[in-house]
Length: 150
Image: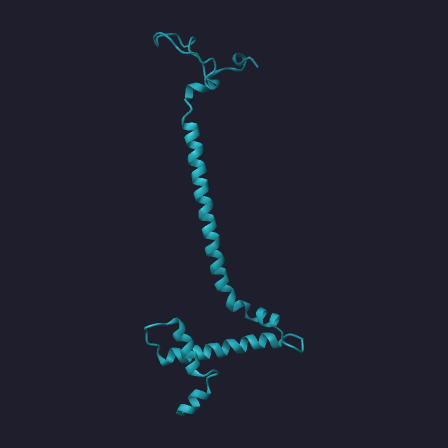
C-alpha cells in the first residue's frame, strides 16, 4: 500500500516544518535529510505519549506542573548529570592543585632541615674523623633505652 503525501503527513504527531525550524536552531550550515526530520518528529511524538501516560497514571483529576516535572525527569536528568559531573571535576581539580601546593610547601619546609639536627648530643665535631665510634654522637635510632636516660 502506497501512502499519499497527505497520509504521510497525517501519521506524524507534529508539523514537520515546525520540527525542521527547531532543528535549524541548533544545526547550522548542514543539510538535514527528510528521514532525520521524520524520525525526530516520531521520537517527539513517542516521548509525548510516554510522558502523558505517566501523568495519566496519577489518581489526581487535574494534571499539574509537578506531575509533568516528575514524568519528564528521566529525559532531562542526563543533561543535569553531565553538568554536575563537570562542576565536580572542576572542584576536584582545584582541590588537587591546592593539595599539590601544600605538599610542595611541606616538602620545601622540611628539605631545609639538616639531618644532623636530629642527632642526640649534637656538637660541632672538631678534629679528624678517626675518633672511635663511642665518641661520635648517636642518633636516636642507634641509642639504647638506657642511653636515652628516660
